[in-house]
Image 1 (tube, rainbow, N blue to C red):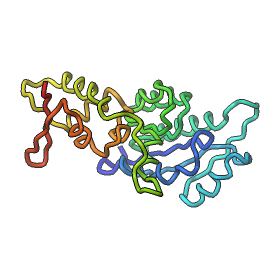
Image 2: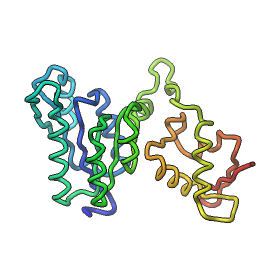
Image 3: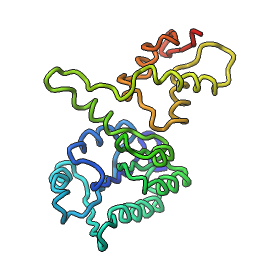
Image 4: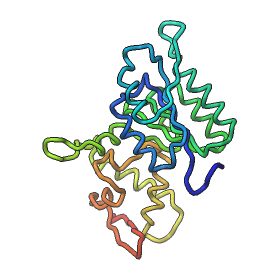
Length: 237
């Protein structure tokens, strides 16, 4: 463990799979989980498709890694990223990894890192296959990150949520059912931990709310109360 109070994170970005214009918002999101001490971006930099990434990498201080595809249709960036990840893992200097990609090919890599007891945070688009989303400790949708960072320029309003708040009701109830207690009032923080453990891609921003307390307050199936600095929830049914 490198530094318990501020986890050191190795950030590995698949430039072939992520838009350069979202880079700042993604890096800002990562700082909520730890310090992105190592930041590498992988791609074939001779390709005109990565022109946007070249300037963005320079601005943000990302280390670019050239991965040239020797065979048409083969993604050399994936292979290079995986090899580097294993070298970093074996060096033992970091507390966790952030894999920025929507490519399910990184599923086994994420699983292997977790086998060594390190945390894996995935960041990708909502189209990312469940295989990668579920193997991460936490998975964050780029759509949520960008929506929070860039409100509508004309009105200042946030973009429409990907899901209606009511769709989170079953997740909350299932989390309550898995918490072993007799009291009807459940600690909100514990509910959040249980939901995320079962659903690594859970994010209140998907439902148009910044915090779990805001989301629960929106739902008519629950009531809340505050005791000191803690919020408690119970079912009304």
